[in-house]
Length: 337
Ligand code: NAD
Ligand code: WQD
Image (tube, rainbow, N blue to C red; front, side, top):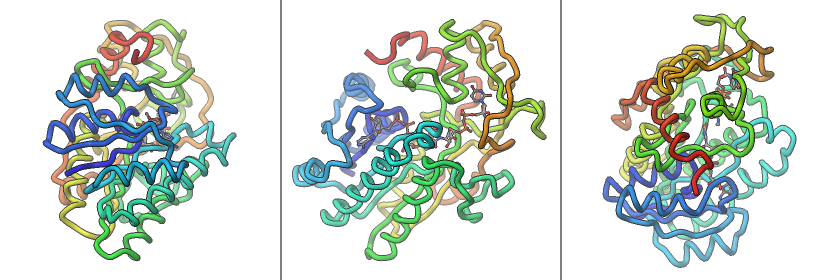
């Protein structure tokens, strides 16, 4: 298939392009490089032998988008492009709605106008809100989101479902990611957060590199194995493989499916910290800090639907996730240059 990958130079998008190319698909990447780097393209080229065609385009730019669709014929679109910082979305809600909603609407308009029937969308476990008990099942539907970022994911799910009802032959897979971490084992691709990281593993990585003093563990009084928050971490390469399966599934079906992508297992903050200590061979200091507003105690996925519809299961465990994350940070002390 010839696949348009929006946000394809980003963390999950770049790993997905590698898996798509290695599975015989063609990709065209569209990204405005707001949170990624042009050198990612060369690295995808190194890993696959193919440097994808690239458009530096913003999905808020209708004319720019139109040009991409005029110049290519796509069988499918995997839509990663968007902003993802939960805290920033609270202080800049308009910026988030403009990028993640207005931009996505422009993209969907083009998909329909140019007859691209298959779409895979990056949704998030955040749409379950704090309304349900883990394991989160797709059939629970959507809960109450607690920040504008989460609301943009919930709204995009509803918009795509409506588009599938209105446009015969349209096919969508809404992938609800749990907590993607890790990096490509080559050390060529990985996550490069801007400034001080908000997410757990990128923060631990900075402590391991000696760039931050200690981890703040947000709460140790949850009803969990050791009192710290429990999450379902998934290796980014496993997540990328799920996209290959999802886009191939979309091509053979019509309608809209919501599918969780996680490992189905939960790890506490301290368990992740200890796995990272093993990976880097150092003891990493931490202090217990107050709970972070908006956090829930436990989140992990029900994985039966991914297994049944996509034949997808994760391969990599938490040790491998931490080892690959550490390897990437050692190989790229200044990010992707
Ligand atoms: P990322 O920031 O690394 O990648 C997103 C890419 O989109 C970046 O390269 C950025 O430059 C690009 N982009 C942003 N706004 C754009 C715009 N207006 N036009 C064109 N390009 C734009 O993030 P990621 O972790 O790879 O996440 C990819 C997708 O998955 C996002 O939609 C994110 O919300 C979603 N998601 C991520 C996580 C996670 O924890 N990483 C979890 C659930 C869902
Ligand atoms: C994991 C655990 C924290 C940092 C977020 C988004 C979600 C999705 C994935 C995009 C929690 C604890 C963290 C730290 C800590 N993104 N923690 N100290 O909150 O599960 O999910 O990323 O869709 O929408 O909300 O991930 O990595 O921030 O936190 O103790 O410095 O680590 O309290 O228990 P989260 P996270």
